[in-house]
Length: 628
Image (cartoon, rainbow, N blue to C red; front, side, top):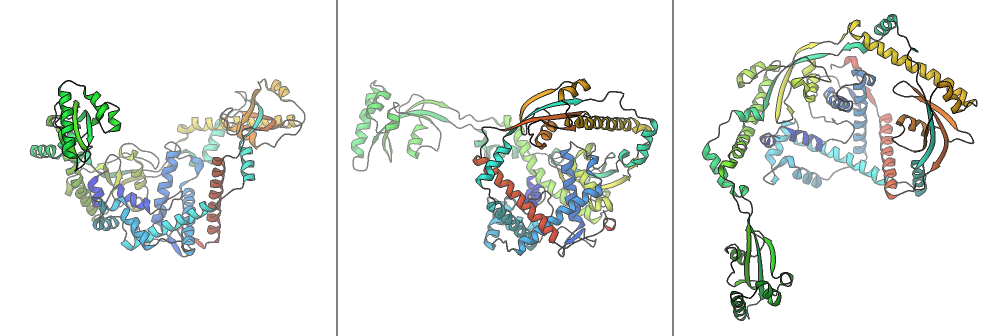
């Protein structure tokens, strides 16, 4: 991300701080320090307000998760926006109730621990240490006072302690773990028979299409859409306008020459004769004699094996392998890196004794030419300058957008930036700038949506920042019948097919439970029985709906039992369960026991949430009184 923005207090660091103090729920967003205004609260939990702004933020996050989960669009079956908002509000009520409970139970973090936690946060570091100026500036940029931030951090850590306590006290007993293992390892012998309605089993009339269209117009609407005006600032656009002095490039190259050099590596051998202060002169004469023998033609490796006091290298003929600078003691290294390949050193004194060094090979040490790294250097300098400039630019934009909240044009003109306009887009999808989920979320949330005000800075990927405001709104509208007629026909055909399948399936189950065999039913349906043999729980074959249905059926007695299910393509599949057995490998392993304890822990936690929510005094503002 933008380093200058990190240093000067916006960008992803801001989001990182929010993450550090957030409670790990399915929804984030408990933050009583981000505004509030005079608008009525969305709800009050035991006297503590959940602001509309908090609800908007949590809802935008929840909605985006659903869109990602379902491949870019919101399924109609999830309900309308109001229903989703109420679901999010329920989650926030749970969060507040849990936070209050943790406080009442005296879960706390000490002042010393809080201080250490804050001082260790990467967001507040500069040059390897905590920076008070960055700390204060970061908090101001997020709308926090120092006290407010520390209180929120205390709350978050208190709830983490509560959660840790629940996890730490959850357990299971061996008998239950073994029973669970046997259930998990259960196998069931099943067969299936599929019924497909004839192609002419369902007819759809024009009258039926019109009736469905008139009865359910909300299913055939174009979604509400908006267009936005926006200003986009990117690191690349700022970099493009920056010129670099060639002298600065050369200076950067020379100051960082080591970064453009490969390390020099030398392969060498040595002979060591250990010495101390008392016998140094004597050993010096002995090593000189060894050198003379080498000069006289004796093999260095042979003498190393015979005479060297370094037991590790002596066994290898004195070989030390590859050596870089900084590995050996100073005197040894100085002598080694002064040698030419094949050269034998003079005797070298170190704290270990006297050495002879033979250099075999030199590799590395190459330095990249200035011209070969010029483009890289230029990009580095441009990026550094752009990061500094973009902060000032974004800060100026933020101030101007705040001072004139109902228009971005003055900010664009004063700073010489382009004011652009998007195409129409809805909450779930868009083109161009609207392809970015944070842009769509901002356009449909808070004062941007309800009052047409300028947004705050919105950070996107690839070092881009956007400010936006609504230009136009287009309400949801029912599509003309002729444009959705084919869609409705297909829906009615699917529905009719399912009804026909279900009717046939119910009749088939009555016959099977009255004594008809699966083979007899297969002949009546002109279908083939699929024998799946023994199937494990969670098996991928046959299709998961059949496996799930088979494991929900009661254990058969003397005769097989039957059930059935309508599968996604509209066919009805009869399932015959003949036998249940437990896998011989089904045993309560340590991993399974741990997983079961974790499951118990999660259930305990959810039970506590439900209990606290039921006991809480909750007052909700009616939706029609809230200004979305």
